[in-house]
Length: 119
Image (cartoon, rainbow, N blue to C red; front, side, top):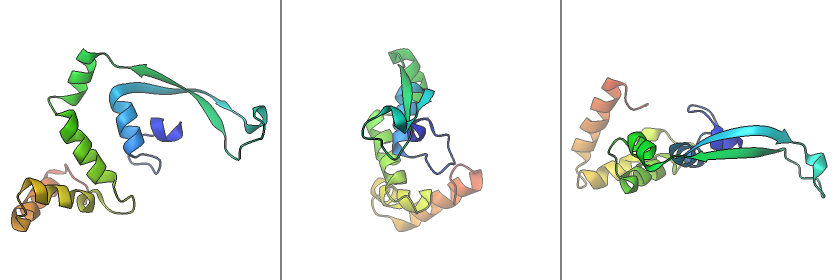
C-alpha cells in the first residue's frame, strides 16, 4: 500500500506508484496489525481504497500522451532502481533518435538545462 500511494522523490516511489496514481486516486484508509492474521506476517498490512478515474479525467491526466508511449518511458525510467533517470532513459532515447548518440546527448543537455530531467 505504501508503494502505491508513495509521493515522488521517495524510496517507495516506482512503477507501481506511477500506474496506480495515473489511473486511480489511491488512499490508505487504515493500517491492519499482523496480530489479526494467522499465521502472523512479518509486515503490517493496510486497507487501500482505489477511486478509479473516469475517461474524461484520465484523458486530462494523460494530456494527449499515448498510454503505450507513457508505458515505454515509465518502464525505461524505472528499469534499474539504482541508476539515474537519465541512464534509464538513454536506451529509449537512442531508439527514438535512430541510434544517433550525438542527438541523444544534445537532448539530455537541453532537458537538464530546462530543469525537466534530473541528472
